[in-house]
Length: 136
Image (tube, rainbow, N blue to C red):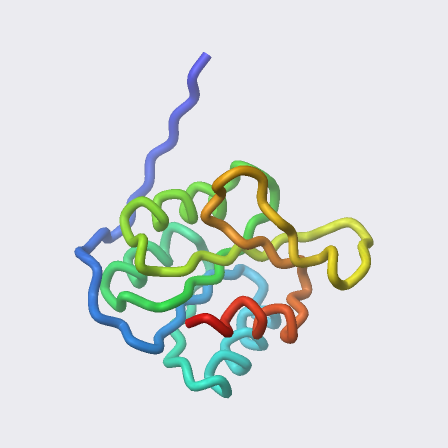
């Protein structure tokens, strides 16, 4: 049995974003904390509450990085991240997700195979996020 989904998103050709970031998170506190941190690191930050909303921003702004919230595998965050990777390969996609108790180093999950995503445990440890951003 196959299941499908549809989205209503503004998909545009990639822009020339430079040091831009998009954050999609339905938790205003986490979204604001991430936006402040990225702004302090020199990023111009745009925020939305949902992953599919982020797709239009990613296309319009061409950010270097996009942080999308994942509540559980194969939810809106995962689907939006997969679409973003296909449509905008120049944007580094980072998923933020709840994680079981784990040592700090284990919170930066290694993804199996050739997954294009990095997953950071929530609440996001800003030092781990900085490690992810160091190559941008």
